[in-house]
Length: 118
Figure 1 (cartoon, one colour):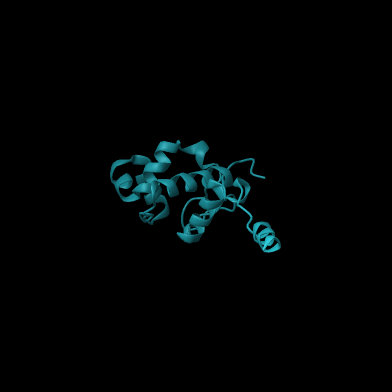
Figure 2 (tube, helix red, strand yellow):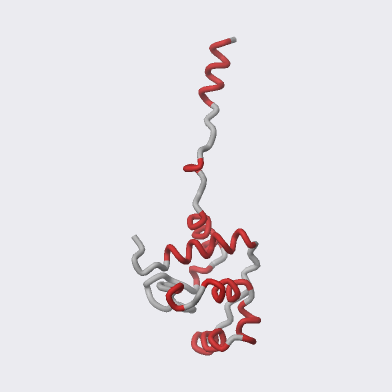
């Protein structure tokens, strides 16, 4: 019986914090799953929507959060959001994401859009 228990113990490896995906990695998955790559790039130029390279140097995090959470209301209330809609001729849809997903997405946008990304 002891050899069997030893083998079972050897096979059960607990996951370590290193195995967990970082918020930015989860944000990248979300960015792809929500179809954001259809409209946005990082440093590859304009597609349907703006290039997101350097996003955090152009807008503060609170503005970005509000825009992602409810772009329709932002266009109604915010002059910068109105300018973006007028420039790109398309309305970004409401993403319907949780607060945790918002944090992950922002971590990815910050990392991927960094001017000095690896």
